[in-house]
Image 1 (cartoon, rainbow, N blue to C red):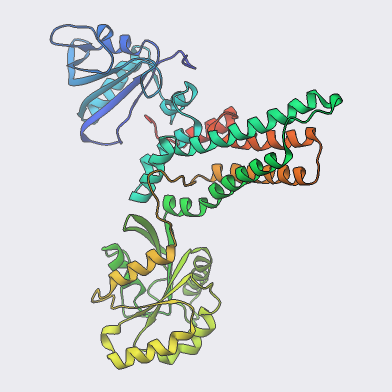
Image 2: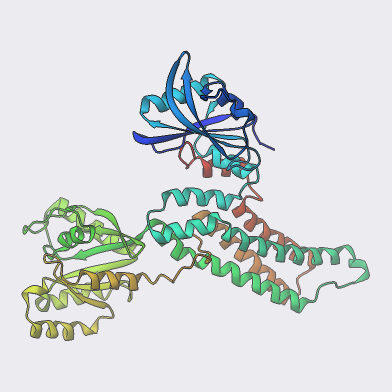
Length: 463
C-alpha cells in the first residue's frame, strides 16, 4: 500500500533546455489525472491501457495544444515507487516543461519534494534504505569505480550481506532467549563453542565491511592529492597538464599561487582530486604566508602528496628537502623531479642516488614538455592502494553506514567477550539485539522520520 494518498509530480530530467524532458507522476489516480490533459489521435484513454506501454498524443492546455508527447504507463506494484506512475516525455523547452507541470498541478497533483519518489519506493517496500541511498550515489557517480560501487549497492549487494548477518544474529538471539524461558530447568539449547564461532564469523564480516569504507569513501569522493614544493618548481604547470586545462596561473614570478586550487581528473576509472598549493618558501608577504599555512593543512588532509622538486636545483636543496619530507608518512609521498629535460643522464643518476634515502616513490618528468606523465599517473594509482573491485564486491561508501557498522562491531565484540567470560544470557541477548539494531539502521528496518527526512532531503527534485 502507498504511504500517501496524494499524487506527486516533478520534472525528472536536469534543469535547463534539452532535446527532451521527462515529467513524472506517481500515486493512486496518477493515470486518470494524466488523462485530463492528454489526447491521443484515436481518442483512447490512458486509464484503459495496459501497464508498461508507451502512447503518442498531445498535452492540451485549455483549448490549445501545448506539445506532442510520449506517455509511458506503469501500474502498481510494478513501478519504481510501487504506485501507479506516468512519465511524460516532451520537448525540452522550459516553457513546455513548466506548462505541463502547471497543468498537472492545476488538476490536483502536488509538486514533489526532493527525493520523494525514491522515498515512496522505500516506504512501499520496493527497496531498502541503503539501496535508496545508492540511487543518489549512482546519479552523482563520475568515475567508473564509483558507478560500479553504487550499482552493486543499488542492486542489493550490501543489503544481502546485512540480511545474512541479521539472520545469524536472530538465530543466535532466539536460542539465547529460549534458554531464558527455561532458566529454572537449567536447559542449554545452544552450544557455547558454536555460538562463539558464529559470533566471531559475524564480527569478521562486520569488520571487513567497516574497513572497506576507507576505499569506498575515496572512490566516491575522489582521492585527495596535494601538489607541494618550493615556489616556481612547476606545480601549476603540472596541474594544468594533469587536468588538460589552464586551471592554474603559470608564471616565472615566485609566489604566483597564493591560495589553494582544486580540481578532479579520472585516471583509469579512479577519481583524483588534485590540490595545487602555495609554494613553500620564507616570505614576508602576509597573503603568501597565509597560503603557505594552508599548504601544510592540505598536506595533513591529503591521502597522497606529490612533492615537486626542480630537477636542475635538487642537489642544492637536499638538506631543506630532507628536513621537511622525512616528516611525512612513508607511502604517502611521491617525489616528482620536474624539468628533467634540462639535465643530462649522468646528473639524473646522481639525483637518483642522492634521494635513495627517502622511503618514497621517485618519478622524473617534464611537465612543460609533458614527458613521463603516464609514469606519474601509474605511480598515483599504485599509491592509492585501491583493491581490484569486482561487480559482486561490497564496498561501503556512506558515512552513515560506516558509523552504524562501527557501533555494530562494538556490540558484537561485547557478545564475544561475554561468551568467553560466562556472561548471563539476559545480558548476552541485549548485546545481540543491540548489534542487530545498528545493522537495521542501515537498511531502514529501524528508522525514524528525522533520519529519513535528512537522507531524502539531499536528493534532487524529481528523483
